[in-house]
Image (cartoon, rainbow, N blue to C red; front, side, top):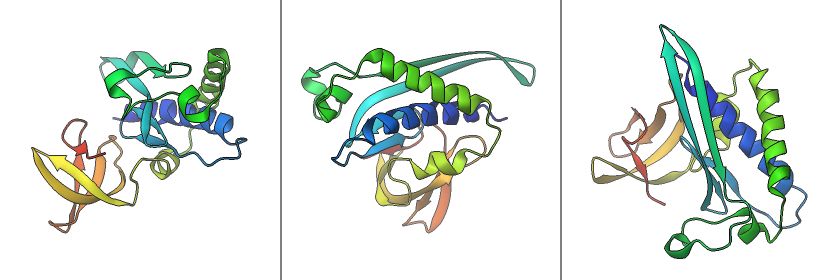
Length: 176
């Protein structure tokens, strides 16, 4: 029932590791998690997460976690308006090994943590508690992300309907 906790832990491990690298910089950078599996820095995608679980009965039998972070890449071609890298946005050559070690260190800490991490995850979500545009079934609507439910569905307060709706991945799109 709680497969999404892996997504939360991986997302927060990446967030915490990158925040630790960015924090000492004097300039202000905005690091955010875009539900359910992207990492954004200064409103540009710098990474993504893919988690594949094998279920046996009611339990996760095995899990493959793939993480991609644009660390040193500088050319994004036609995607440069929406994707970037740590090097481009921070102006630093951060060793890939440093990023990897930070993420793995945070992930190990979080895997041993049985606390409710959903509030920290939500607090760092792109668009959390902010009125913004979304698209559902091809129609644009204004809404406010209120959080996630225990299954990982995104809870959005739909302003026109004056009610909160829950969405699975690909049922709703962010208008960026």
